[in-house]
Amino acid sequence: MELFFQLLFYASAIFYNIDDLGGIAGKLVNLNPLALLIDAARKAFVFGEITHVKAVLAILAVTTVMFFLGRKFFNNNIRKIAEYF
Image 1 (tube, rainbow, N blue to C red):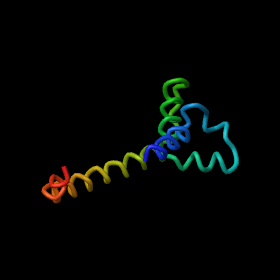
Image 2: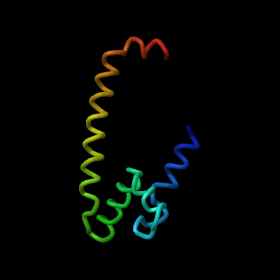
Image 3: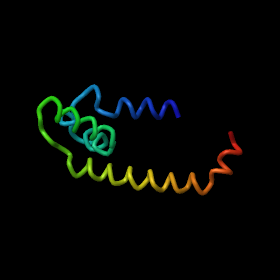
């Protein structure tokens, strides 16, 4: 799992600009939701531009749905989950 998070970190466009990447590498990085969020935040703070609006709203929608589904699952299975700890 640690390796996965290291790869996700280096693929998240912290060290480079997404617009500088072309070809298949650019397409792959654009699939990473962290890269889009970081790029949108960088452009908003540095340049005052609002970018990736649809992607950010889609990520927000998916995150909200996953939060409520996870909360419901946890509340329904709290006794089973507590047994493992």
